[in-house]
Image (cartoon, rainbow, N blue to C red):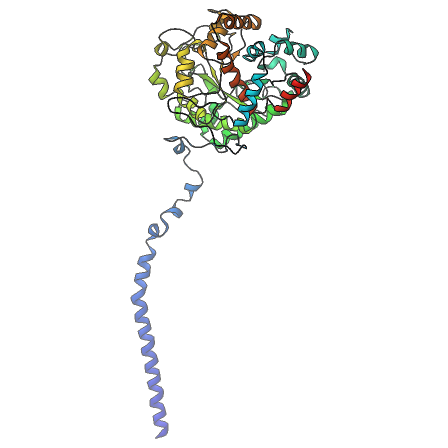
Length: 461
C-alpha cells in the first residue's frame, strides 16, 4: 500500500513539472513577437546616425559660408592690456580699431617728438633704391644709415632683385631696422601663387604656398589659416614685418585681371577666407595689408598699363566687392590699399580711387568705418604717371584721405610737393598729424615702434 502511494506522488510531480514547462513555453511565445517588432525600428532608436557613417567623415564644406561669416579659427592679436576693445561710436568709426591703449599712448608720445619734416617722411613707403640712390639695394650699411637719417621714411618695400639668399636678406633687414628710431615697415608682396617673392627663390629657404584660388576652391578655412602661418613664419624669419596681402578682391571670372590671386568669385566665401588670412598673418606677427579697394575683381583693364575702371554702382560694390574688406575691417585690419581704378558710377568722374575723397574718405573711412592706415597702390603705375606728377599724385592722395604714398614716381619731388602744400595751407599740419598718428599706432601695435627705441633715440639726440 505504501509503495503504491509513492508511485502516485511521483507521477503527480512529473505532471506538475510538465505543466510548468508548458506554461513557460506559452508565455515565451507570447512575448517573442513583441521584441522582434521593436527590433525593426532602427532609425527611431539611432536617429539614423549609424546608418550613414560617411556623414562624419566628409562634411559639407560650403554650409559655413552661407549667411553669417564664420569666426577666425585663431583669435586676433591678444589684448594683453586687460582693457576693453574700442567701441565704434554711432555715426562714426572707432579710433584705431584693434589698437590697444598702450600702443596709442606710445604713438602719441612719438608724434610729440617729431618735427614737421620727420612727419612728412613717415607718409612715404618706398623702395630702398629710392632712398639710397643705388641701382639695386642688396646691402645696408653706412650709406643706408645716412640716407634714412636724411629721409626717415615710414616704410621700405623689397622686390626679387633685393633678395639674394637667406643670410644676405637677414643681415640687410636687421641693419636697416636698426637705423630707425621710429621703426620701419619692412614690406614685401608675398601673396602665394604667382606673386611670391620669397617662395620663388630657393636660396631663401622659405616655404611656398599655392595661389589663393586653390584655397578658395577647397573652401577650407583651416588650410587658409595654415597658409597664413607659413607665410608669416617665412617673413618674420627673414626680418620682414608687413605683407602686402591678402588680396581681398572678388574675381568676376577666369578672365578677370586679378586671376588666381583672388580666393573666389563668391563674395561671401572671399569674405570668410580673407578674414581668416588676415587673422593668421596678424597672429604670426606680420602686418597684413588688404588690397585693392574698392575691388579689382571686375576691372576693365590693368592700371599698371594705363587708366582702368570698375563700372559697378555703389550698391553693386556694397553687395559684392566690399564684403571681404568689411569682414576684415570689422576684425581690426591694420592697413588697406586703395587702387588707381576709376569708379565713374560712384564718383561721377574718372579720378583714380586713391585720389578720390569719395572712395577714400566718404566710403572707406566713414561708410565702412576703417580707422587705421590707408595706403595707395604704387604711384609709379602708368594710370598715375600718365596724368599726374609725383607731387600732384602725393598731395591728391593725402587730400583724399590716404595716409601713406606707396612708391611715388619721384620721392624727393613728392615730398617737396607735400611740404609745399602744408606751407601754403592746402594741407594742414593737423591733417598730417592724423595720418602719422595712425601709422605710429599700427607700428606700436605690432612691435615696430617700441618705447625702448624711442627713449634711446631721445638719449642720443
